[in-house]
Length: 231
Image (cartoon, rainbow, N blue to C red; front, side):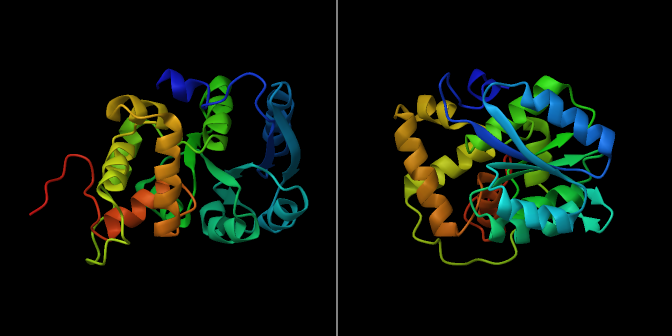
């Protein structure tokens, strides 16, 4: 993980991150609440034990990041991502999971999640995940990202959504797992310029996150998964 990812792209004095925890295991959720609340830039605005509670609280608490358990009493977390994004478009959703199954990763990515973190991960990785997601970066390990993108397939060719050559290039670098800072260094441009290109890509593809943008781009033949060659 790059230094840029390790801080989640945040600097001292940055605005607080409002966080909603969705998990039906009370002890686990409360432990997360206590641990994450101890971070000076993180504010836990609430905990929800069901998808129904999550839908209500994502509106009432306006979180920046939602930590969403995959298995909940009233359904699968990944099946609710699109609805939660509709209720709170600016929220970044990070899926908490015990096992990173390929089918779940693909479903969550196509629904617009910002990343994944295993429940067995150390606390500092979870803190990084929240900050990274809040900063608009992808919270997925390079190995998992490559595995995920190679599960996505071209379904049909469609117009390129007027993406510029630079925007395609940036998409391809995002697919390699590079952060905005790393892309800026690779292309010898400013981080702000990269961010502007990323926002343009998200708008053109009608995507809520970098992961979702990659999913759409690969599905529609705009870019290939890392390591794949066009015929």
